[in-house]
Length: 287
Image 1 (cartoon, one colour):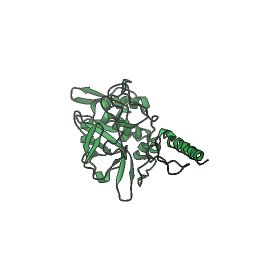
Image 2 (tube, rainbow, N blue to C red; image 1 turned 90 degrees about the horizontal axis):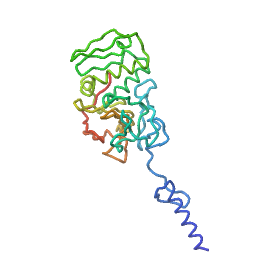
Image 3 (cartoon, helix red, strand yellow; image 1 turned 135 degrees about the vertical axis):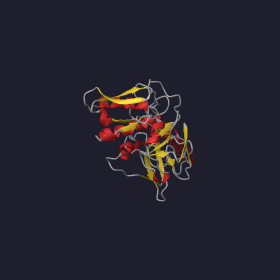
Image 4 (cartoon, rainbow, N blue to C red; image 1 turned 60 degrees about the vertical axis):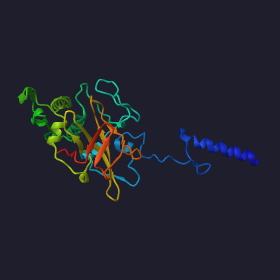
């Protein structure tokens, strides 16, 4: 009888240990240990609902009309989705992302790194109807203002000379807005954006800020969410596009897989992401 009870107990323990296909340690017969991996909620449909802050950290509360709120609540593709390029092919590396933003990449090899950050900023301002605040500088310094574009002016580029030409009817349609962005992506990039934006210290890092190095090539990534603990340490999530143009995705943290995809501000002199290395002096902020 004792032997039978022992076999039954052993069977129940084995069943419990195979729960969710994981080898879990069992404290009691009927209460298998729950996985400690609570950072990811696979069913979450937005950045805020997909990723939980690390233990001891609280997600920053944001105003519902702010750029920070817009990014925190940005919709995501389903968990385990793969990153696609502008031409529909798969990105060569599928090991750098934790999630993919639900926004198109376009049909041309234009929406790369800096362009993706400008796309998110412009989409937010367009949604808020803050049209006069949508403007980006070309590499030669020309200010491409959407307010001018929506009045019917178009950008004429001849060599290094750029001028406005009145050649269309006034419109603030989304289709026209996207054509404006194509122009911006064609003549702006990390070099121009890094020059245009003011610098920010790591201590003052906010959601929506960029880590950016201007160059050919350079790279840019954007902070899409943040959390903080009582001692002031910050955790943040980062998103990027890359070369060639590809879907915007949230980066894994190769420096600390225990908190990935979150990154910590603690003792952060060098920011190592899966495909680029930044420093704490590379932080910029949209106007």
